Image (cartoon, rainbow, N blue to C red; front, side, top):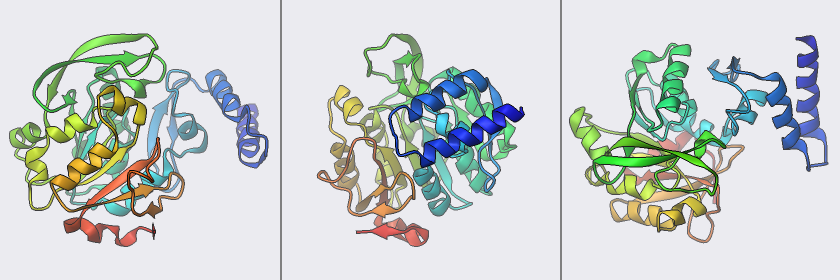
Amino acid sequence: MKVRNWLNKFIAWYYKASPIEPGKWSLIQTYLSIFQRRRTVSISAESNLKMELGFPEDRGYEYLAFFGRFEPGVSKIFQQVIRPSDTVFDIGANMGWYTVLASSILQSGKCFAFEPNPELLERTVKHIELNGLQDNCQFFNVALSEQPGSVTLHVYKRGHGLSSIQPVSKDKFTPIEVEATTVDLIIEKHSIQAVDFIKMDVEGAELMVLLGSQGLLKQQNPPIWVMEINFETARTFGHEPIDLLNHLNQHGDYSFYRIDAETGELMFPASEKSIQHGDNILCVPRSRADRLNRCTIRN
């Protein structure tokens, strides 16, 4: 244990201090594959959240396991924008980091987590239970799309974040049939009065989710959205990422902000010329502009 703690500190120092970039990430991946099998880890002293991570199967979450942080910019926006009474949709919950984070903020509100991959949803449920947040969350093993039915989910071994209803990688995948429904049908079936905040990461199927949210977008007070920009997966589905922003603007007066990946500062405006692959975009309707009072905005 002492040797592992010493190695942790040394590699963390090397990662942050060394000017030699090549090999840094490979070093962390190799270290975690050897020393970090599946175990519970504390994510941060501030929020005291916990998740169970193991490598190499949880590839993509190395930074979370090693430094106790995951997508710090977007996580900060969650903490600044979500209110304790909100209704939050986590569409594409994966194994539940944002489901856990949102549920930890909510008091009288509720988080609805949607994940079509049953193995990942099981881990989301486990992470919610690990943090004692069962009363704040409801789970759905479905894909959200533009119409109800069933779809084929392509599940890739190389990083479980790649699962998609289109083949978005040349790697080998396992196809599984999953139930599909729409945001509007979920709202109707469960008598949800309002949705305040939606995080959406569905590997290219974002426009399909929006098309299944027409009723929600027509409401007087539509939700805030956070969505990741991925040019490759969007084109697999036959659209460009800017089409997502244009679609939102057709249904409401939205403003768009790029989220700084490290600090959470908002860069305005996010436009076709400024958005880049990998950006997370905060989409805020005029009716909810006051939610940005705690955020730092750069023009």
